Length: 148
Image (cartoon, rainbow, N blue to C red; front, top):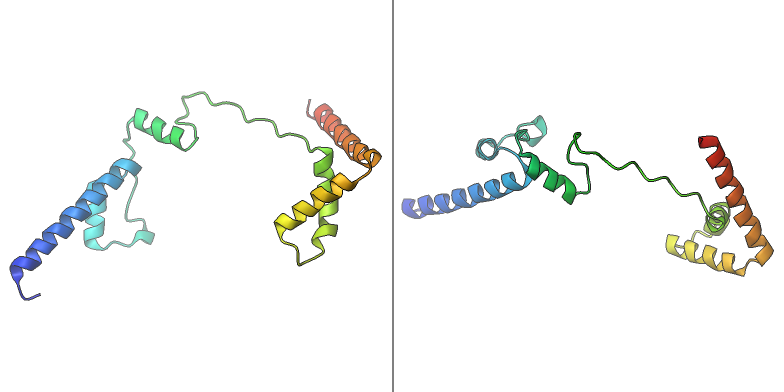
């Protein structure tokens, strides 16, 4: 650029825009905007750990952000115990056992494999389905008695 006034004006616009972006991101993600601005200006290396997260975030802001992501806000809040994992149904046991056979056809996509397993399950005789469901009940009872 030949015009120093124009160059200075462009530099000022870019600097203001950059500072505005850094400030907004710092508010949203909780890092130090001054450190980030100096990091950007100095061309720091991101991989060397040039930036750090600000630790002095207000508790209410931290709780709000944690709630937004479905996480516990802090150690001092009581968290709900993890939900127990459901036991597999007869259908799930059947699918687990039959998947290798159906998936042997390499032309099938994963969704098509699931669809084929569902069609096969529906085509089973009632007594065969009851057999799988019985296996699932037995496995659930053994798991329940073993965990107590």
